[in-house]
Image 1 (cartoon, one colour):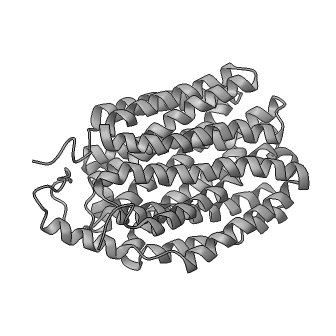
Image 2: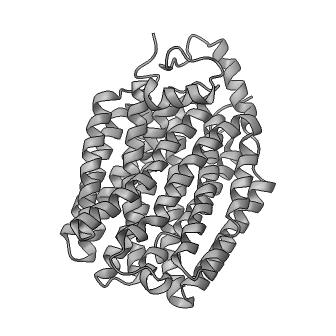
Image 3: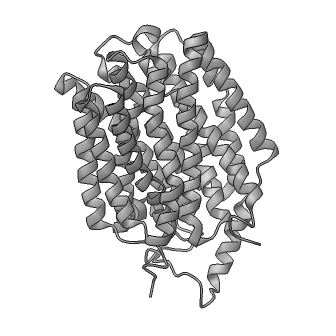
Length: 425
């Protein structure tokens, strides 16, 4: 069985198309819905905790589904979990269209969390099955580039669609087309990649002298239980724990961008298409730069890119409330997006480096559990910071400080994981 991007190009492209559609699905909820929370869905002005309720629900649900998806993928296969994720998403556009209160949006976002936890996890896991160890940074960079390109494009398109046809009709038709197409493609065109993972296990049993030797955690059984895996990833291995906490905190940024950036800009008189473009600058920068930062980590390593990415992204967040015009806000979005591009694919690649193929899907699922729990914990932190500070700007300072401290913890407790640059002895 052949490994590598070129050898499996058809299926790699199918998986990239799937994650593009995953990004389009979440992107349709990230511009119009928060900006019009007050006028369209009845959220009282200044109700910061109510405003963040939908992203908190999303974070806790998506985090839990990432955990479940990893374990299910090792038993049922990647393709079935992907397909179930899309079937769950089918009601979302209708729920947004008929929503008569914010609770409908929260409920739709719960389904979105299930969808994202199952589908995005599987696109990443499937591509890691198909490719070689020296391509992991590149393949995760491509995966996240495609997904966050979708997020950014959806923000722009739905902004214009809401202006032309109204927010509910625009989101209904956009969501129905994207989710319908994704479901059909998952059913008809995506192949099961679990056999590649099994073949990699056999290859590891009798490695060649030239094979890369990752620094796998010591003392882990060949088929660890769910409890053993959770303990290993969360506190048992210092490197994995450092990566998980960094993943959790970096999602504070995404929660801020999702909930408060559109509200912040809307309150300053920016139109819906204008909000879509400014938030889109962050997404486009993040998405496009990952194509290069993932490949860069395959050559020079993950650790410094991850640590500096946390600090640069936090700096971009801190700059946003200091300006008063679209050029400044776009510049701060570029800086935040560049920092996110440095860390986002390479935290996942670092986990994959030191996760054995027997339990790699579970390791990625638990990392993604902690990472996307950051939506929920970060959302609560954003709301609390805004309430205590009495304004949206306080949430920006909270996130910037959290990123600085988390980056320092990652730098101190993490290490280089690339098996060529820091191999096992």
